[in-house]
Image 1 (cartoon, helix red, strand yellow):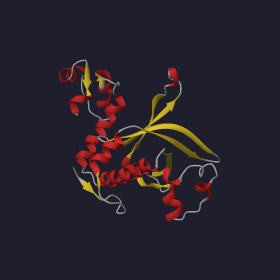
Image 2: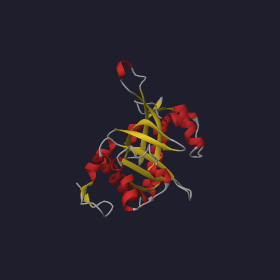
Image 3: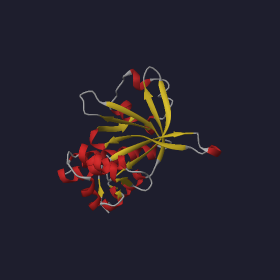
Image 4: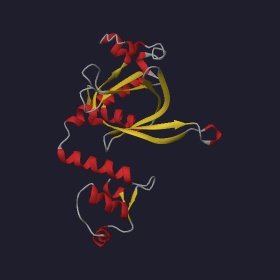
Length: 215
């Protein structure tokens, strides 16, 4: 397994094990900073093959007190510009903006709060997540820092492959990972700008396209 010093501040870690750890779901609190702090439950994990961070909503509508997860959103890792803990921002960078010192936010241990700066505009968006353990927060910060740097140097053919995977995942019918021929034809014509007849497509696939054939 590969070992590498991540972010230049921490000892060498097992990158493969760290990324496998991020692929497992972790329960967090998403903190929205506005005029007042708003908190909601989320489950997050990294989808390594598409280089996306998946953020699922969690509610209490399941029977017997079980939580129910619903796909909420994804964050493309190539748009992440920086990631660190609130503790790093307050005590090492010494940023004294009032929004980072709101009483409701400081209720959480700064070492357990992760800040993700992302976007494609000059003014970046920031997503704030609070973990139960500081060790989990550190793993996520280190892992996202590594993936951010690795994604920035990705060769073009791999970028295309990951884009196709993201598109197919958004179209497929979970948990079967299949796409109907009708939906696949629309994708080819509209997104790939290629003309193909229904008969020609039927010769390539049967009733549906199985995404697992690509994996």
